[in-house]
Length: 497
Ligand code: HEM
Ligand code: HEM
Image (cartoon, rainbow, N blue to C red; front, side, top):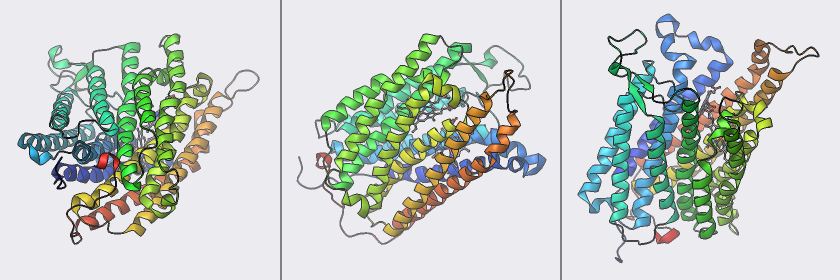
């Protein structure tokens, strides 16, 4: 081992940090627009006949989900990998020209794919499978980007100095393998130009159009095996990778239990893959599969809470840091929200509860206490930790960070509480009936009742977006301030990295 600290190369990490912020702003802004469109439907048509097609709810919704999942979250995963990877493996990207080339190729191709996604979704070109809307040419490009990411990741692991792989690396590897498998299987599709010509009006037969290789119930099963595990390998596994590195590093505390981290890792890997059936309860999927989805969902509490409790116990004896540091606050509240959504999810997966929850806003509430409180908080915390080290400057304003924390926490709380009330009200009204079995309410009755909750959700979302803009400003000011003299800000760390 060298005595001199390694000079890590953060070029690629910095590039992905910028896209994390840019796509975060775009995705969340669209989320806020969607929220207000649901509260005030007139907003769908505000731009008039010519442009309304591009800005209505149905055109913007997949842009929101794809911008926050494939833009914001994935960029965050890549940015942190290119930072954490070097440090825990004790090797610099700069030591291999090939790795630098692969890293840059990874970034630029990824950016090109995201631009293609934005253009095609705005144009209304979509497979209409949720979270898998891209047509086949983009899917092929996604596979190329993913393979390059894998080469770059395993290339770095291959030339490492640190023999043992820190737990975060396990989680990053699982992210790579998990998404590769899910994406390939769910996006098996047949271009229609092979079968039909000339192209029809709906795009069928044109060079970019395709149909899924699966049909009916099989399609639904593969889609929700994918959809649920996209949550696992996009919103859970890489975010756990981040917290296992950044919380111990920021707090100077060693992980509470390494054994528990391994147990939770294998538990997550095994159990998640069987739980996707909970998206298809009361559908045409065989009953035993639905029951299996429910049972595995309940078991999923164990590995999920295993990681979260491990993180919270890492702060044992050091709770004063939570009060003192806004960055630790983000991570501790992030773990708490993770516990929260992984308790709520299994409850919603119980068949009798799902009968009320399915199709309602309670599900949307569940999604956003997870993504805003856990995924969003953790990615911002990671970037806040990285910024002084990669830009070699102090964070511009800790008080701005603290204010942001409280504004966003209020935003998340408004978002999920309003959606809980809206969802459960909706579910109960849909099933209410009189003594003759007639439905007690028409659909529009529920829409009227939901209006105030939709408006509150819009305000909550707006607060979260304002907080995100404060975050972007803080990072921008950090980047553009005067550099700190020391080469690296060193901290006590896991594995000494
Ligand atoms: C123990 C872990 C979890 C379980 C068992 C679980 C269970 C569920 C259930 C039952 C649904 C509703 C399905 C329906 O009726 O439509 C759902 C939806 C969803 N959950 Fe979870 N959840 C868990 C954790 C999480 C976490 C941590 C996140 C995000 C960070 C998340 C994101 C989502 C998303 C995005 C959907 C909506 C999918 C859609 O319909 O488009 N879940 N989850
Ligand atoms: C300012 C913050 C945000 C606001 C205001 C917002 C708002 C919305 C709205 C209004 C919907 C449509 C709900 C419906 O169809 O009824 C939605 C869906 C969704 N959003 Fe967000 N969002 C925000 C941030 C995020 C972030 C950061 C993520 C992920 C990292 C995310 C992931 C999703 C997902 C997965 C869905 C689909 C949920 C489902 O099908 O059940 N959102 N969001």
